Image 1 (cartoon, rainbow, N blue to C red):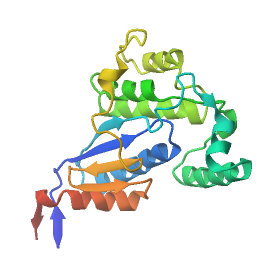
Image 2 (image 1 turned 120 degrees about the horizontal axis):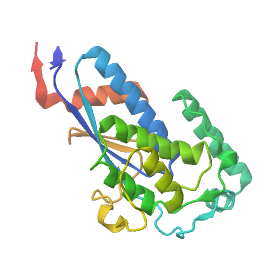
Image 3 (image 1 turned 90 degrees about the vertical axis):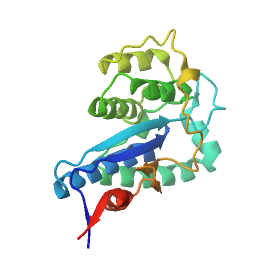
Amino acid sequence: MTQVKPDASVWVDFSLDLICPWCWIGLRNLLAAREALGLKFPGRHLAIHWHADTLLPQIPEQGLPYQAFYEARLGGPRAVEARRAQVRAAAEAAGLQLNHGAIQTFPNTRLVCALVNYAQQQLDGEAMIGFVESIFAAYFVQGRDIGSPMVLQQLAEAAKLNVDLASFDALRYQSAQGHVGGVPHMVFNQRLQVTGAVPPTELLRAMEHACAADTVLG
């Protein structure tokens, strides 16, 4: 039997785009897996390193009409509703209630992604999780435009993040990861990769397997 040292740390590089509902679902599943890990191995610490990157850099700075964008992308209103039903079901399983009807704008996420990458310089692990979730909630629940510097400034201030977006250098904080094949994308301890909003049980297994170098045989 393989036993993982209870004090071994798990590091996850988490690639995401703030416009992707699957990334919020994936984050919630990761947090559920973290809780399960802590129960199984008390004292185990999960550290998240965020790599936010816009998947659609061609979106205009002012964004596009949300419904029209998705109808053109997916092939019409029926296809859009079918996709949203799928997303809502997965979100509800993760404890989330999305409000697609409140969203008016599909934003360019260049600035918000850079802001998330920058925020790691100031916020600790739990504060970063809270900040990222506040952005997801602003968009997918409240319908706020997270491409708007004014909205992002408000969210940053609420998170006690010291930043002035009027002079913020977004280019400097673009993700060094580059585009991955899909998001959410997680790499555990620089060894084991998982793509998609997979269930917490699968993420828990990935965490344990990724610590193979820190295990002892018993």
